[in-house]
Image (cartoon, rainbow, N blue to C red; front, side, top):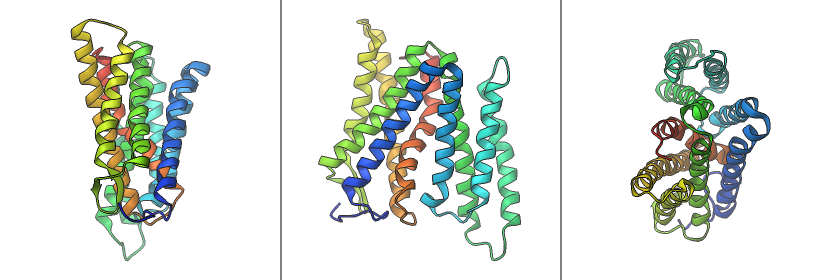
Length: 272
């Protein structure tokens, strides 16, 4: 990328530093807060990320849902969290009710918008994606029940490391770019996924070949999901309305949302 600034108006260096800082903060919340406050801390950490994503969504994406998207996003986040916190034996399948009801609410929201209704399809899609994202973040509440605590921690650290390495590598080696106008380079995409895989191997603590291969595969899959969604978030921010403050939040939190169901599956299969 030859431009000194991205769509947010921030210099490229500041763009990556802010995103890296947001990733580090999100990872620290998810890993450290449950250790200090138990399940209440885990719920608080997930809720903070959900609120941050809801707050950043409309300013970062520019969808015409200035009031409806935050309201529906917060309602979906609260509903998803309650479905996994209130029952004595919560089931991940119960979360399907949230996007199901969210679809009806999103359609109703479009009907209640004032005419002329600009970009109905984009607004509807944006609201539904937000509902799905905050619902997916709630899956992080179930990580400890899917397997042991160290595996859950490894999954969170893996996602955070993947995202952090991607932004730090782009600070020094942003070429060749993935696409014009998006300050993300191919080397960062590859190295970030490899960093996640290496972390998975280091955290296994086993010399068994089958265990190492399972950890390597899990690390590559989980790292690839985080890296690709982080890249997609970069596309969204670069093409958005150009506000600086929501960009780091979207780039940090959205990949965690996408990776949460994958992390749950990986931990459930004892691959980490």
